[in-house]
Amino acid sequence: MSEQPDPFEEIVDAETNRDPDLAVIEAGSRTLRAQAGSPQGDPVPARPADPEVDKALRAVEQELAGRWGETKLEPSVARIAALMDVLGEPQRAYPSIHITGTNGKTSTARMIEALLAAFDLRTGRYTSPHVQSITERISLDGAPIEAERFIETYNDIKPYIEMVDSAQEYRLSFFEVLTGMAYAAFADAPVDVAVVEVGMGGSWDATNVIDGSVAVVTPIDLDHTDRLGNTHAEIAAEKAGVIKQGATVILAQQPVDAAQVMLKKAVEVDATVAREGMEFGVVAREVAVGGQQVTLRGLGGEYEEIFLPLYGAHQAHNAAVALAAVEAFFGVGAEQSRTLDMDTIRKAFASVASPGRLEVVRRSPTVVLDAAHNPSGARASAEGISEAFGFSRLIGVVGASGDKDVRGLLEAFEPIFAEVVVTENSSHRSMDVDELAAVAVEVFGDERVVVEARLDDALEAAITLAEEESEFAGAGVLVTGSVITVGEARLLLGRA
Picture 1 (cartoon, rainbow, N blue to C red):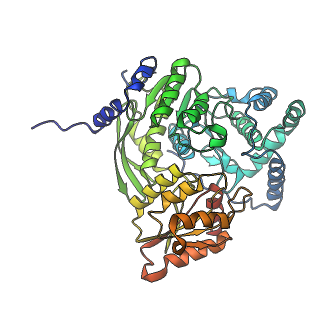
Picture 2 (cartoon, rainbow, N blue to C red):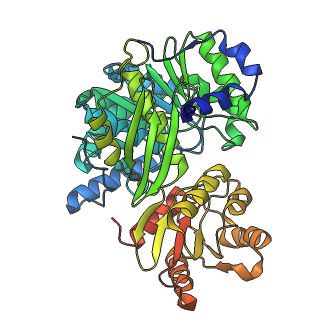
Picture 3 (cartoon, rainbow, N blue to C red):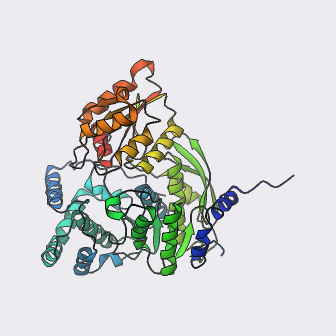
């Protein structure tokens, strides 16, 4: 009887034969090969119950809102570097795992955080944007920072912020101040390791004053093209800035031109590279109640029967990337040739939550929230919801930002939406509902588009449509298009 082929070897063969041009680049890069009780997913915090604390938090939020927003950028790390200098370089007080990419960064960060915490390390996590509360962006020990601590951290570093403001051509931005707060809070805790997600890009992102010993690159696609470039290679060149001298790079599956750029940068700085589909990856996965069951190939070997309480193939790939990042952090594949403790890995993954990422917030009819805001994210969401839920009829609620590829996003959802309710969220960046409706009609046809300017009315209309024609048990609603839309829907539906 012939021996059955190894599924992972088939993945390796496919990747090896994918593009011969990569071989030249990879020849100069050191490749990483394995020779030699976790906290529950943190809830999204509500407003503080104490009126005085809520008032103080709103005052901080108002001060932050008076600064440059996250979409107005001056490409430089000079201001954040100056802030770190006057604060005494808090970002040097702990090792860091730095995460860039286009999609999947926050989910991957949450998985890395859960894995590290399961091995009794105190973690700090910095992610963006937030779903409902600004305090979500800074997490300690697997949970969002308390409102009181958020306020205290801001007040502690405010004099230094003002000092830097007065010395720079431009004041520190909203995102730069939050980054400074996160690094200061992590040093004050203190944490054993920080898990840091870039805001945008890499080289000149405010987070890029850390020396990440592990650099993670999630899948790169076209987004923020007005600031990062119009091709995968141009965007990858900016994001490659997080790869530091001698670091370990965990590279998710990428478009070939993006992978070439990343590998060239790794060669330049003598970084060690582990590539999904080569050194690590997803061996097998199947849908399970409440998520999926996966087998992952890590840097140190195979990890079987892992339950991941998240939906979609993209989350399985995020899990593989997260596992490889944590193995690399612990030296697996370089100094060690063993797997991490299997039970600990299983417990950690089983504890993961990622609010607003194919998150079920209501039943009868089922309402799902997903923060997809670009075409690649929408395609992953559409595939995930089709695989995991099997709705007989799916109604979409879409509120998108005007600076996104809205047509591409709608086209990705068109095959799975019976009808779409277009709406707006409260952000000034939200696309005007009539403009969004015009694009939706071109994609879906007039008879499949409903227009509701208010999000609460849009949710009600979608739920009503899902209950029509005696399909109550088999119909569902997907709310998507923007993190802000998802966060506001979450509040309206009473999730918080």
